Image 1 (cartoon, rainbow, N blue to C red):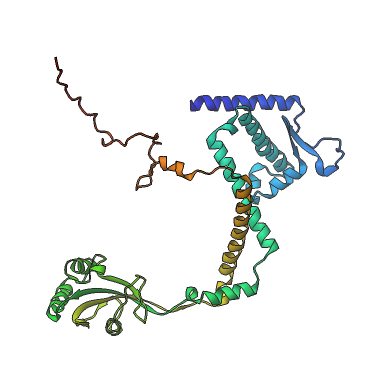
Image 2 (cartoon, helix red, strand yellow; image 1 turned 90 degrees about the horizontal axis):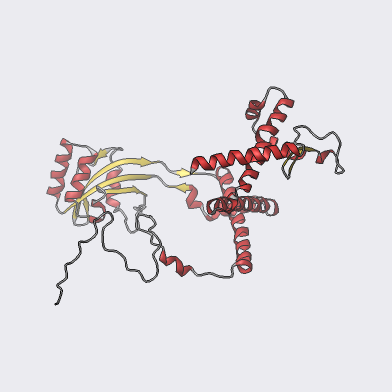
Length: 344
């Protein structure tokens, strides 16, 4: 089927090329200047499509210089080969696709909509940037309102095993001195730690701020642990059990992070991008609201309930209304028929 489609495409392109030649396909500008002036000079005709000099110039401007060199050694050779090998070829294939009615295919229509959508969004972004450019005052206001994003205090990463008694903590420390590997610490944390919220993570508390806050919601480290961690270097175990309430902790300082403080000047370019994106999104939202009120005449989202999406994100075949789900596993043989007792 694929080979047949390729043959049809080549045949359609050949037919279009013959038709273009018969209508006077020319790879040079026409000798006579049209009424519109030199700017409208026709470089080539391909079927019912006309390629003009301004179009050639626009397309050439989009090509990187090193790529243009592949079309020839002189400017004249580059221009002629670009028209012949790119623009004319595009039109031949496009008209061949139209002759085969490829635009009626669902997958092709999806791609066309995707291109149109991207072009519209790009235009809206350009219009937003031109009509409402991001000002220095807006950048400064955003920076002041989100200072926590651009600065962070010094932090330390801690691993901890929490046990009931000092003796248990000392025994764990002695065991870790024999095998001071991260894997051994994690195994012991999963087996012995009384803090079940962190034991399954191998006792990893994450990075801890000076006030004891962590990235985990509801998890805050006691001040005594931070004081004990401050007495050792990165990658060192705290040599003694650390009291934590009425329990004791085996503590490992894994690494530290320096304080971060980025200035307005450093963050200004990224803030401008954020604000420009927000303005463009506002224009997109307004356009969608207007188009929705104008063009959406029927909307029944409940019908998609017929489409089954598995927990893994796979789509199941569309179910017909009224059908019952099969309890047979995929690939399992059909059930054997049940014998009937004929009543005679």
